[in-house]
Length: 142
Length: 142
Image 1 (cartoon, each protein chain N blue to C red):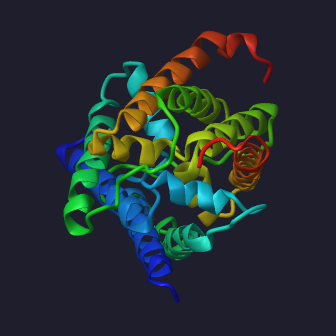
Image 2: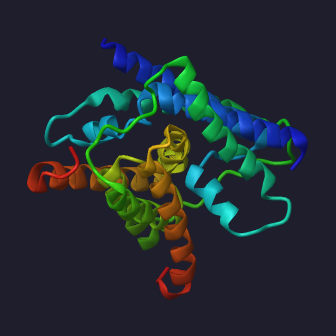
């Protein structure tokens, strides 16, 4: 990783977080409102996905036709296609956690800036959950 | 179109711009749970860009509060214990399921990855059911 790559990462993180903030993703009340499809649904966050996927889907196609990224040797895009037990079970657990507090990883990290204890505890517990996975990884089926 | 939807769309496009920049310049997918999880085990030459990204995510939280005050805030009525349980589930689940809203939801869906599509439908579905149970059956989080 060169200095350029590190600088890019910083600004990607920064712009991503500004996008999260403007869109309402750093307000769990809006996230819960969006997930409340079976009750009092607030559709506004659907536009986040429309904006993000709409933009990226177009430019993704153009970019991967290039021989290599601008500041590094090759593209590292996941190419697995197998649907596994782990993929589904992991996503299910994540979905439950998301519905409980209204934070997914990005908004959780960005929201620590509000100094509210809850996103800080959320991120700390997220680290514990990730470490817990390492302990159990070998014992879980593929 | 309500102004909230416009902000959501704008924020979404910014997220799209940032993940597009990451791919174009650094050749990488912007999966926040994966980037964050990579920080929890040392791998030479693979740490600094991850650290820079997470610092960017935090810096962006401060920046967006200046641009658009009130962007970051949680008015829901739950405490730190709920946040801790959610964080554990999100941390464990996103590593088991190889991604979260950014990696599967934005990047994966943009390239029509079958794995990411299954993952996104799963975590959205479980999020919806969880919110229904907490908000309408138990009467929990706001």
